[in-house]
Image (cartoon, rainbow, N blue to C red; front, side, top):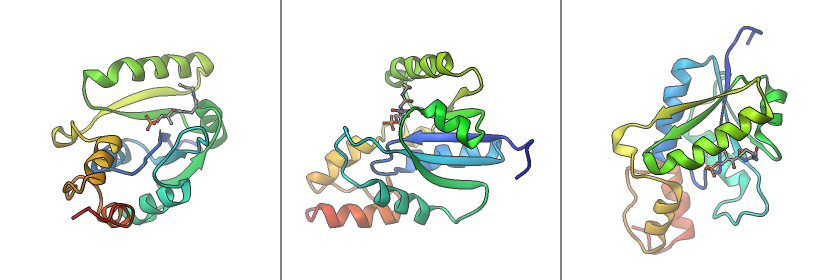
Length: 165
Ligand code: PNS
């Protein structure tokens, strides 16, 4: 890393990581010198996996490299961006339904900090319908989630949902 390196944060709940997230991370890695996948530590939101479990699953999915950092943060994203010298926030954009909340978040972050730009990356078409919440809903009832999440995530989901194939 030197000080001309372009650093981006990809923030989210990642509860759990899906192949849609993996796709966005891979795309971001092609544009930025360093990508920080940042799991929000949010005690007021009930999550299926603890922050540590989520970090572990992300770390096991990607081979470690100085260009890809997996971390957690709490508080304001723009403050975390300042601490990590990130100049971009990456968000995946799936469909029109994502637009309104993403637009609101991006404008709020821009108002809070002029030093960081939000960049939307389109996920591959085959991930357009995937989200952590829909995958959890399918898994609770034993539906097959193969191919929608990384292998390690499927194994961890099986521990939580015995009905899962
Ligand atoms: O995966 P998610 O749940 O859509 O991610 C949302 C996330 C973590 C990006 C967003 O909630 C966030 O950045 N929270 C940190 C608090 C913050 O900075 N809020 C002000 C901007 S809206």
